[in-house]
Length: 182
Image (spheres, helix red, strand yellow):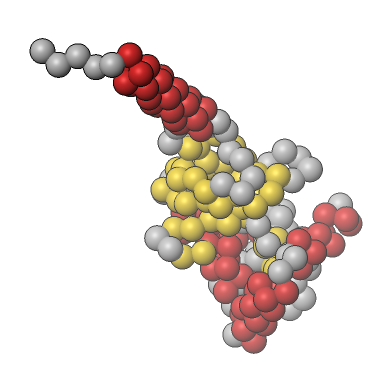
């Protein structure tokens, strides 16, 4: 039978301890992420549970807690439900992603505690799709990246020229202006 010198046994025991520590650490991090709710800067798969209006929905993550959150679309502002084209905008969101599996990239948490994010369905950016279809305005105040702002404003101008969605009306009012008047 082969016997190891004392130094080799100590090295093996230390290597085993390091390996156990590494595995326990990895499991701890995995479980912490599994139970964590939505966090800024992260991407998640979730299912849409309800659509509140043209730029807000409720969805839940596929984690053990099934974390549920109100989610606001980043970079767009859809008409309020009581506003002209508000119900149509909400129906469009429901048609595009209602009850479906989506990918969400959380960009911020707003002052009401809602997550703000970019929503994707099969690689399609739903936030941009809402602007393309004339169902929402570009929320210029919250776009920091000049290239993104230029691109989004281009989508909005194209929808205006083609008189799509809310641009079909005579004088659409920005939701932010509408909220201030109410």
